[in-house]
Image (cartoon, helix red, strand yellow):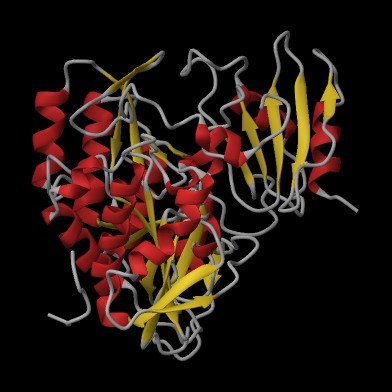
Amino acid sequence: MVGMLAAMSASALSPRSQGAACARSSGDACPGTLRLHQADDGALARVRIPGGILTTAQAEALYEAAGRLGDGDVHLTSRGNVQLRGLAPDCGPELAPLLAGAGLLPSERHERVRNIVASPLSGLDDRESPDLRPWLTELDRLLCRSENATALSGRFLFALDDGRGDVDALGADVTLVAHPPAGGSTALLRVGAGDTALRLPAADAPRAALLAAETFLHAARPSGAWRVKDLPDDVRDALPDRVAGQLTGAVRTVAPRPAGAVPPAPGQVPAGRRPAVALSAGVPLGRLAPAQWQSLTATARRCAGELRLTPWRGVVVPGAAPDLAPALLADLAAAGLITGPASPWTGVGACIGRPGCARSLADVRAEAAASVGPPGRLPVHWSGCERRCGHPHGEWVDVVATPGGGHRITVVRDDGPRAPVTVAPGSDSLAAAVATARTPS
């Protein structure tokens, strides 16, 4: 083992204020596979998929679980995980063994505290970037062996970035970045969303990430914070130094975080000198009907036998033969997936809305479908209430349903939200107002 460790508001979207509201004393209610959440459309299970990586056998198990026990659809989340909805409240004794048999429940005590996103194109495209699989495998193994990690909330997020800056921009609680991107001989470790980072040997990165999470847990005890951003300012700012004090050879540095995440473009991924290509497909509103999930699984079987779910509710299929790629993409497009930039669904997201969520003020998915048009420069996210579940990061258009049937549209940027535009109930200008917001001057 590498000898590194010395010791083990309603009208404006404000991440800081919303995050502080999550520091509660009532306990973590995030659902998992063993503890279901009762929604208006039935029970909900959230299946943790580290790095979003699935084998075709695991994809088949999810298909079976969704069809036999739920509403039939596979719902993707903004953390590269899967939700199963419409479940019977007493399906747990059948669901858990089904998923465990496919390797989707490696630890009963850690199944709600293993949010790990990773650069989905790592090792697949024309960039000279390292493959993050060794980091991913080791971090998941360490987490599942850590007794302390069981105290992490279901919202705590790890991100593994291959140097391209895609998941580094998500503002995870603990982020590892390959550095330099071309070789990855060292790593940058971030704790929280700031620009301070610790440089350390790449081989030590997974264990350092676990140490950072455990250090957060110790710092969070007085406040009950669930995430790094929920900590009091002075405690949060001191956290990198507390982590560095427990590492040998870590060097503190300043590494500005990327301003915005760039998800994989839909279509064939440029492969450079690699012998196989990857296929990228977007999923309208993150909801995969049974035929769409089967189409993706069948495509993966004809390639490398793997699916990579992205934090942007998309899917990457590695290992396609270049001569087969156009036909495979055509099959995915025929199934209703996004395989090119011209799709009106490009960049469109929404929470579950009515009738699935009791808090929602509108069927925002239907409203989003009625308002789709030519793709805009900014992504848009439709929310049925002020919680804005699953909203993107960076610059985006925030559409929130308001009491009485209206909507509030705000362009969110890194330097703060722009003045919102309010669309009255029943107005036929909603689609036009959203399109205008997505193409700011």
